[in-house]
Image (cartoon, rainbow, N blue to C red; front, side, top):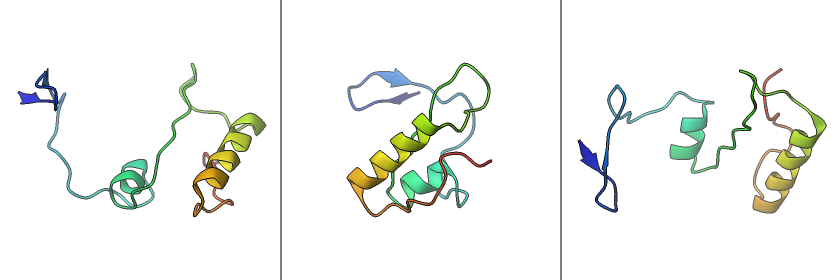
Amino acid sequence: MRKDPRGRPYYWLWGERLGTFRPNSDAHAVHTERAISISPMVLGLAALHNEELEKLRRDVARRIGGVKNDSPVVQK
């Protein structure tokens, strides 16, 4: 059992804590490149690429700067 910063217990479901992450993954972007990862939540099993999501991606990229504006939100 581990404790969070407030002293509350938390548990890992399985596995060990990773030290490195697969390139081009959200974990690599967050932990290695110190970027953000945005995951759209939908009822289906896969996020759909649509204009509203693309507009959000461009807006976030513009606001934080330094993000490649040609990178898609999801791979087609």
